[in-house]
Amino acid sequence: MDLRRRDALRLFGLGAVALGPMAAVAGCSTAGASEARLLPSEVPLPQPFTSGLRIPSVLQPAPDGGDKSTDFYDMVVRPADVQILPGLSTTIWGYDGQFPGPTLRARRGRRVVLRQSNELPVPIATHLHGGRTPPEADGYPTDLTMPAAGGFVPHHMNDPMAKVTTGSRSYEYPFEQRASTLWYHDHRMDFTGPQVWRGLAGFCLVGDEEEDALPLPKGDKDIPLMICDRSFGADGQFRYPALDATLREAPGVQEEYGGGVLGDVILVNGSPWPVHEVAGTRYRFRLLNASNARRYELALEAPSGSLGFVQIGSDGGLLAAPVPRQTITLAPAERVDVVIDFGGVRIGDAITMVNKAAGGAQGQIMRFLVARAETDDSAIPPRLSEIERLDPAQAVVTREFSFKSGEVGGHSGWTVNENPFDPSRMDARPALDSIEVWRISTDVEHPIHLHLVHFQVLSVGGKAVDIPGWKDTLDLGAVKTAEIIMRFSGYRGRYVFHCHNLEHEDMAMMGNFEVV
Image (cartoon, rainbow, N blue to C red; front, side, top):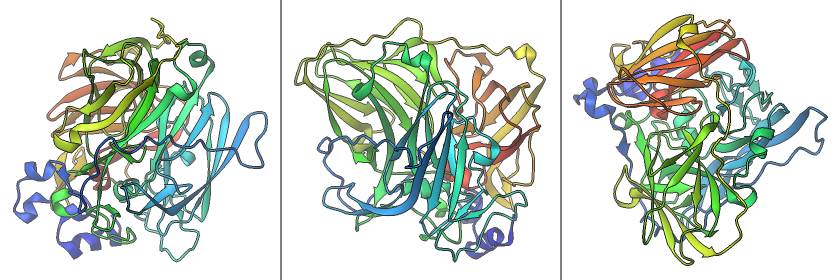
């Protein structure tokens, strides 16, 4: 821990400021501080289902284009004033000044170079979530891109391996991976939560020939949906309980929000509780939970009868076969690709996507209005993809990781194996192309994300499970133990694994592994 981080702890007298929910210091129970807390808006909430759904723009290639193997893209990370709530202006921090950021469309096996410049007043570190990327392009939390305007003293915990640039950085993505729904977001050390909250998130959709050959819905019937919650101040600005509203000095949130921040406005692609007109056909929706701490249990409510989802994909791409579901559960950072068939719905009917995990306004997500009939040439085939099953007998080691509150600097905080994050400590050194089993346990709910690799879930609570497809984020419930299996292929180097409750992550619930 560097001097600036220790000073923040002493200055506010609470470990929750930088490293975790210091309930004991404030005389609160640890359990109470562990729960995510609602931050109410200071403006009246807008009427649901009055705003139209926005479809994120697609990032266009740079003027200098590319070559036979590589596409080049330019992106400016900058503030922008946008209208999210009716009649109010909100200053976002956005990729190309947009929230969500523009969608990066990529192809399997075709290299992308993303040239990103930083016009924000703070450092950034962009992580391609779910990407199989070299370590220098992974958005490691201390690999900061400093503001182009200068005047910022680097703060990266005295990490001697940190690769810090000023003004701009190029990220090189090989995209040697299956077709899948990925997303990119900020990953700055200690400040991921507030910077994602201000808008630093966008989709990356990877395609390939296998997926192209399937008769799934395509074109304007293939729609990404970024679901997140936010709160707003009286002036229409994002409201977040940061200790330092400028995000330049002291990290952390107010003590009572150390367990996670929940907003009271549900946004889909940056619109509050939107409505979207659809035809009476099948649609593919790429569902992403981009909330800091909120979980969703999605369901569809129709005027008559029942309407469900057909899951076709997970974090790591297509499933082997489609799975019908009445509800879809999404923890922070998880993605699920589904098909909804509006073919049996009457023209003029409204279908509401609800959140059964919450009540009131937060129990609503968006609405689909079936506006017209159309010919539908799409289908959901009984077989989608071939998925290799990893064999636990081939694992060279089983590692134990505990995601729990624990002592941090003499106080209660968020830890991995009772240790707060330290860039200089290596928690595992898997060999390149080796298979490992990790046994992960929790105290409260933690969505656990591994960089670089995709994994399969072997068991939860000691019982074998069949969670289909490849995952990069595991939603592990309170007081649970799960076993996951993965192959560390692709690249050597340093990566992180962490809780994707962003307040937990910022408050030190992160570890390192190095592929050797």
